[in-house]
View 1: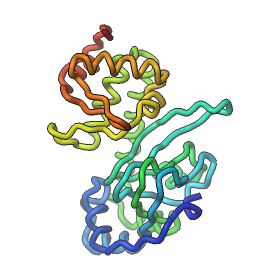
View 2 (view 1 turned 180 degrees about the vertical axis):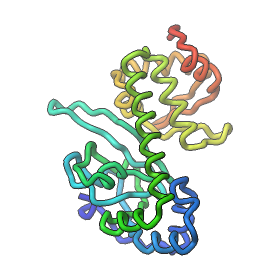
View 3 (view 1 turned 120 degrees about the vertical axis):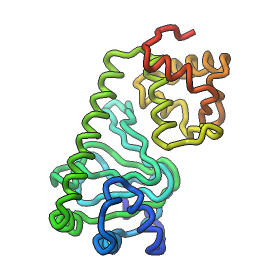
Length: 243
C-alpha cells in the first residue's frame, strides 16, 4: 500500500491551492470551500515503482498529482500487463471507487518519482454533498472517463497498429499540453506496447519506420514527436500504410 512506500514530505498550503485551483473540477469553488478542501489534502512523496493502490483494494481516497506520472494498469494471471492510462501532474485519479465505495478496478503505481495529495473518502464525500456544483462536475468527469474508455475499446478492436500507435502518441502529447518545440514523451517502448496492446517488437519496427521519415526520434526512455501532422492524419483518416 501507499503507506509502505511514502517518504516524508511537507508542501506549503499555497502549492495545494495552485494544484487544486487549476483543475477543472475545482476551479469554480469559492475560496472558503477550496481552503477547506486543501485542509483535507495530505501531501505524500513516492519513489518510482511505489504501489499507490492495487486492484481489489477499498476505494477510500482521492488522489491529485503535483508532479510526476502515475501508471494505471491491470495484469493477467500469466503475467501479461496492460497500461490503461498514464496520469500526469495536475490530474486527479481514483474517483470511481471513491464515489461508489467499491473495490479498485486497477493498479496504480508511481511511474516516476511523484508528489501527490491524498484526500480521504470520509472527508471528501461530506464535502461533495455540501457543494452541489461540485457533484455535477464529477458527473461530467465520469462521463468523460466513459467516452475515453469507449474510444480506447474502439481503437483496440477496430484500428490497426499504425493508427493505434499514432493515436496513443498524439494523446500523450496533447494530454500533457507539450509545447511544439518540446514534444518529448517520457515513455518506454515496453510501456507504449502495453498501452496499445501490441508486442514491443512490433512497436519498435513501426517507430523505426517513422523515424526514417523524420516523424519521430527515438531516445532512451523517450519518444520525440518531430512532425505530428502526418501522425494526426494517420490517426484521423485511418491510413493503413505502415511502411
